[in-house]
Image (cartoon, rainbow, N blue to C red):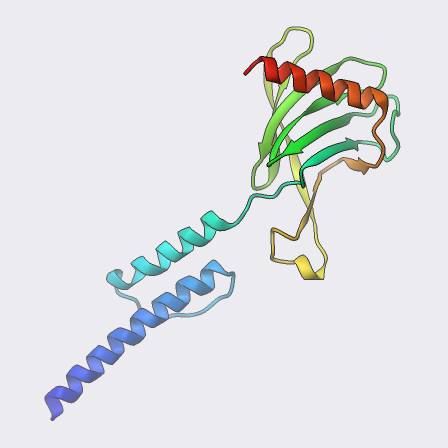
Length: 182
């Protein structure tokens, strides 16, 4: 009887260790903290797989599909201020970076975890240069911790409501330019 009780206790301890490891992995994946007892190498594989699956399913921050105008100034068409008019389609961005009464450069790119990563094509010599704009996450109480509900902005830029005819023209030129270069 003593022998079977020790086997039962060992099996129960092993099961508890695996359950704790699984719970620890799940809690790490959702951001909670849980202290698990010492875990054998064999029992850590499942939580790691769960963590990788959870990380793979978290969407990258982005703006909804549409056309946007952002400026360093809260007002459009201010001399000496930079502006970015762009279109988002499934997380991909095409647009124009410009200063009023000056030339503009076309840009394309995509959202990453913390930035909008762009390739800017110089309008004069057609050279390509990387350019990044940090993302700014604006959240309310309901969206905290849920990247799907968090609003995304461009750090250092203000979202402007109205596109001018010139903004639309520059955007059209850049979209056509990138279509031809594919």
